[in-house]
Amino acid sequence: MSTKIDRRTDVKPGEGEHKYGDVEFADTTNKKYPIDSAEHVRAAWSYINHKDNASKYDADEVKTIKNRIKKAAKKFDVEISD
Image (cartoon, rainbow, N blue to C red):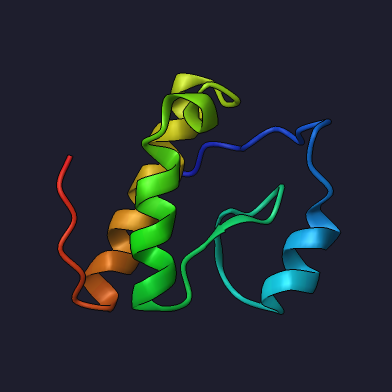
């Protein structure tokens, strides 16, 4: 499942790269939700589950982001719940 995530007009992807460096992001288009460490995975899961953050994406995009976070959670042995 590789749903394309649309470019958001309210985000500057360069800011995410500047802040976190060359890391993996759950939203690769907009460089949001870094998932390169256990701490970032936990934070990404928390943020994408806030209605105001999720509402900036369509349902398929949220599903893709959540799946990427879940995959990273397994990698870092982080427990998350739906």
